[in-house]
Structures are given as C-alpha cells and as structure tokens.
Length: 136
Image (tube, rainbow, N blue to C red; front, side, top):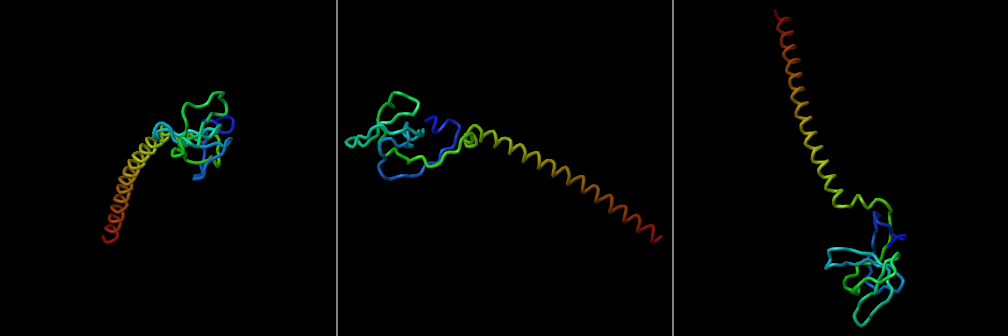
C-alpha cells in the first residue's frame, strides 16, 4: 500500500462494523485468518457480500473478493519504521538476549554475594580479635 503505508511501519486499525465505500482503504484477513492485508476498495459486490480490492502501487486487482466477514476495519493511524519492533523474529532475538542477561545478572549477584559474605566474615573475625586483645 505504498506510498500511504510502507512496509516496516506500524498500522493501527479501527474496527468498523459499517460497510466501507469505494476508494477507502480496508484491513482484512486472508488465507483463513493467517495473514492480514491492507488494500483499497475498487468495487463492492452486495450480492456476494464482498469487496474487489487492489494495492495502490499495482495495476491489477487482487484475485478473488474480500468477504465482509473477513473485514477487520479501516486504517486509523500509521507510524513509519517501527513495525520491526513487533516482528516475531526480532522479538525472539530480544527474548534470547533478555534471557542471557537474566542469567548473567543472576550469576553476578551470586558471585558478589559470596565475595560480600567473605568480606563480612573477615571483618567480623577482625572485630572479634580486636575485642579479645582489649580484654587481655
């Protein structure tokens, strides 16, 4: 749907239960709900209850009709260039990095606690020794 909605952007869709008009952009499910597309309506077929749609940069229509039941809504708000944040591959990488960071922080915490305990133990021993010397 470039130039209006470029790949890699984040598109917010407003649910719309009313029938859309010719020339409006709509967002709908394809491939039995596995994919989502945004296209512009070229024609409406009320007998079959569907929209004929096409992308803005393409000359030919999409194959088949988009049925009314597959309609999600109309694009309401678009943020360019930040769609990668919601990409599943990118999110998996972030999850792995956060998991490794959690393990590293846990290891460092345990290591620091042991060093701190040893230091406290030495200080306690020194205090005990100093108190023993004071009594003798």
